[in-house]
Image 1 (cartoon, helix red, strand yellow):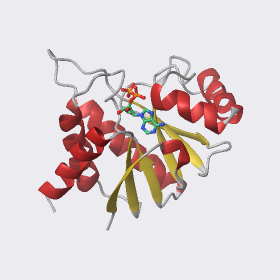
Image 2 (cartoon, helix red, strand yellow; image 1 turned 90 degrees about the vertical axis):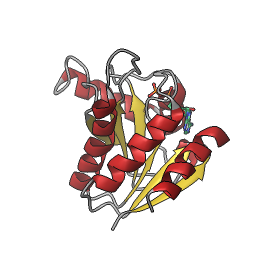
Image 3 (spheres, protein in one colour; image 1 turned 45 degrees about the horizontal axis):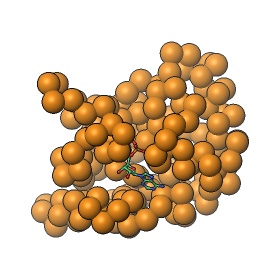
Image 4 (cartoon, protein in one colour; image 1 turned 180 degrees about the horizontal axis):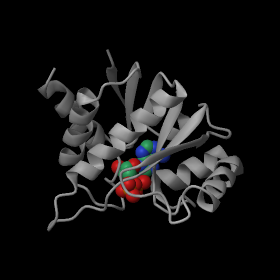
Length: 172
Ligand code: ADP
């Protein structure tokens, strides 16, 4: 059984086996949670991302996929980088957002991670509406068969926290 927990705060301050990064496909850093993870995690994370770009992901990490690196100076063993879809009003990209959660948990299982912290993927610069993103996140984690024992959603502000809390209350 996977327990879902919610925390309001900064994901880079969390202690977990793996911390998920809402990366972009370049894997070379960006703003938002990505920038915060690289700032606090130090250069070792970017070094490994650069190696991944030079080898397995020459064209970048595709949207909906996930890959792990060291967590550098963070209080975690791994960072799992996943690329959320940019929100679109003309195309339903929900399955790509769901795929981020599924694939991150698959990578976590490969690593043997038991506690995994997720941000609200795609809800920042990528503009996904928070309530819908929270629904997809919670539904997908609930539907995924994984050995991860705790999935912790780390929500940056109260609005995000409330959106996830409403989803958790819904189907339990
Ligand atoms: P994306 O490009 O996938 O939209 P962002 O990093 O822009 O990614 O935003 C994703 C979510 O992460 C947003 O809800 C944003 O408020 C939140 N966020 C930003 N910084 C942090 C942080 N340090 N810890 C947790 N969540 C964060």
